[in-house]
Image (cartoon, rainbow, N blue to C red; front, side):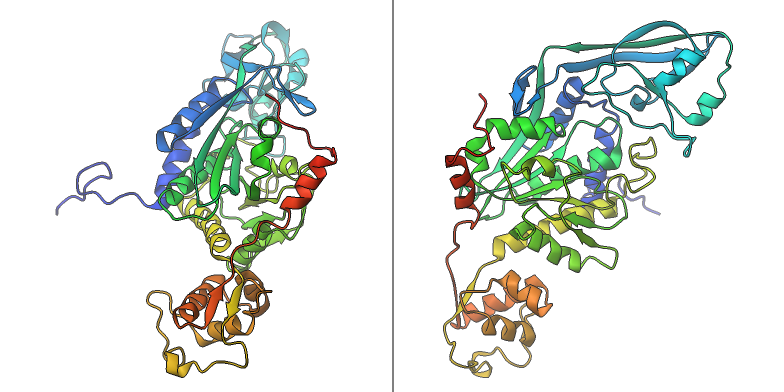
Length: 464
């Protein structure tokens, strides 16, 4: 029997979308990331190998609204030796073993004194938790509760966290795809977690692949992809990019895109922004477990983009909601937990929302006095639209609401039909001379943001 070629051999089939995304997430997984330091830069190096990436360095100590850009964290080794000299915890085995941003420590200590500095999950005794101490200087370890329970109580333990906090810079990356206008659709994910495949690597890998998908398309909006540390990265970006902020019409924060839950979407603070309506439409066709939630001021960087001084139209897209699945922020969130098929589906749902926003418009009927005769135009009966056939229901719904007051997405919400069927129907009606496409209007929110800025509202100007 002839052997099939491996993926990297001549004649091998190209890896599937899901396989490509999973491979990138798996490559990113081992890196010890944090808010600032070599782990973030190594992550941006890998992203920059896949797509063109602008690197931005914000100096340590620079203001970011009410926050201050942190120093870099560099960790070289960390371990615990029991009284017999046996290594019972080693950073080289898992970068979750050290509290992220931990202060350095070295010495001998009793188990009773060490225990307050060890974090475990008693309810999940075989997993290592992920813990941080970003803005308070303290040291700590994370380990399996089962391993902690086996440690001998007598004797001195030798401990080491060889780490330092140094003045440097916080890094983030941006990729821009220019459309026909300078109005922007911004997509962003965090890059500050260490070895967590779903709650970090999945979002990075999906957005990187999505940028490649959009690269050669004719797009109305310009698309900005931001890869930045959580919270402080978004705040620093907002503080230094006032001119870009005023051009944002749509925004999406993503995380936890590789598991089999949901999917879930959290609306922007506005609740009725185009991205909210587009994502709600996408999830309506994503199965019975899909859910759309109202905005709440918890979660990821949508909190910063939706803060009252900005009030930007940013939603949050996830598979399972953060902190609701047992693998969340534990060593079980590994490359085996995320699946290629779920990563590919997440990519495709975001792409569908983009396609809806790109194609949405308010059609205007050129024959509004009664229903025009469809049969003599080849639009009634066995209607064929190639790979995406147009049905008579979609034709009639578009015609009846083509009044310059309803967009295709409005019609989809009212009719229960899928957006792409209505868009295909609109194309057929334009081809038959029955429909015109109204020119796009500026964002209805744009004036409100500028007015608030002129009145000296909460939003700060750029910090340079």
